[in-house]
Amino acid sequence: MASPAQLLQDDDLLDAYSRAVIRAVEIVGPAVARIDAGRGSGSGFLFTPDGLLLTNSHVITDAERIVVAIPDGRSFIAHVVGDDPDTDLAVLRLASRIEAGGRRLNEGAELPESLPWATLGDSRAIRVGQVAIALGNPYGFQHSVTSGVVSALGRSLRGRSGRLMDDIIQTDAALNPGNSGGPLVTTRGEVIGVNTAMIQPAQGLAFAIASNTARFVAGQLIRDGRIRRSYLGVAGQNVPIPRAIARANALAAATGVFVTSVEASSPAAAAGLKDGDVIVAFDGTAVGAIDDLHRLLTNERVGAVVPMVVLRGGAKRTVVVVPGARAR
Image 1 (spheres, rainbow, N blue to C red):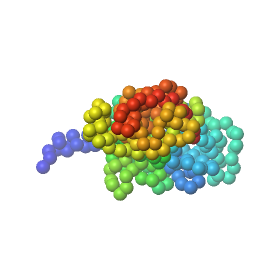
Image 2 (image 1 turned 180 degrees about the vertical axis):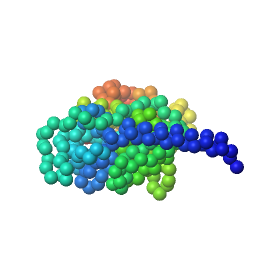
Image 3 (image 1 turned 135 degrees about the vertical axis):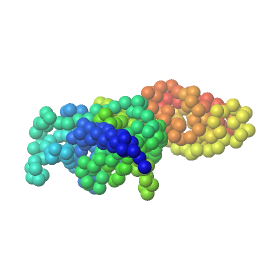
């Protein structure tokens, strides 16, 4: 049986944990919003004092009218500043306040000066095992809080656009439908992630987009309304490379991207890429799968002259491609 001293120590630990969670909720909670976007609802959070809000792209997709409610009882009409389905992030701006009961819109009215907002932390500084707190509105239950730990870092997750999202945080803080877009925070009240998905019916498997990714994407969306990414204009599939061919060509990977079609007038077509080519390297980096190629097709490579290594007829050759800007 535990001694009174041990029991007191356990109580002190529990109290310290409780105090830490309570403090984080008090810091971030006022900035966490419920988002009603017509077909469904989700969560988001204000991250600037002038009314900019982060959420998931899938929360506001095809919404004709977006209403944002914050915990102090105020509701607002919001407009989309920009969204990026590839990272499942969107930035909204509060535009006008809705009076109590939704009876009248003050279109064009100035926003109040006293808007709460949360601070984006540095997701590179977090560690596996540290406390993680999720805030949001699951199933419409406003301002719900769950807590757990950071289970893993650097995960990859397939987004709704089909593109792979990198640098994903895994947590066991319980998420449910409606939590999407809400913040994942530390005990210091810093946002380290944007909650995006859970795996059902598994328990304790939830994921958040890292805050450093969110900060970069938000900055681009505020500036341009979209994220520019480069593209080649090919359709492909992952294929194994026979061992003898890999050895003969000194390839770093045993797989590559088999080109099934080349879009007319695309950068790939201009470079002379052909159906049946197997892409094995791009700008000096080995390409073993389509996701590897997607990671390399960044904004910085739009208009750049890039060497690409392909297998054609079992022999390695280099083609020069100039990636274009992908249209949205």
